[in-house]
Length: 128
Image (cartoon, rainbow, N blue to C red; front, side, top):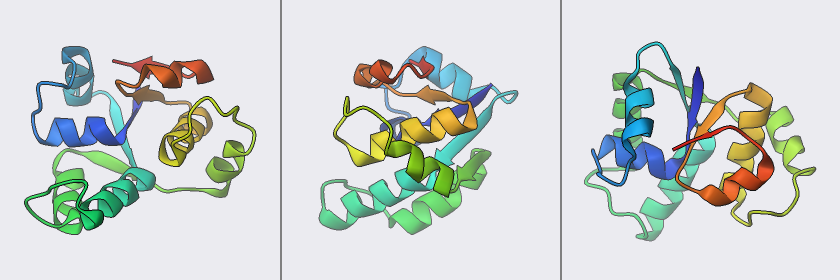
């Protein structure tokens, strides 16, 4: 299975946060699954860390640069197909990062790992 980690899921996994569901944690740790981290999530983390809304012990560059390969996550670039699909999505969700993740899941035929039930309105596969 190919999984795309929502930004909060990535952070919770890296912090071993109990908010991460057991099912999500188990699938992320399953070596047979491909785990994707969107460049959009990295961008969101950098924006929030830079603004002080997200407290990190080190820079986003250091954290992500170490943890993405350490956890065998694949970095998913943002493509033209991803961004142009956002245009056709109904406005169920206002967050532009989440809308882009939905488009990426659709294009990549992946499962979105997210606690955000509001994303179900897009009809994508969501694991929680």
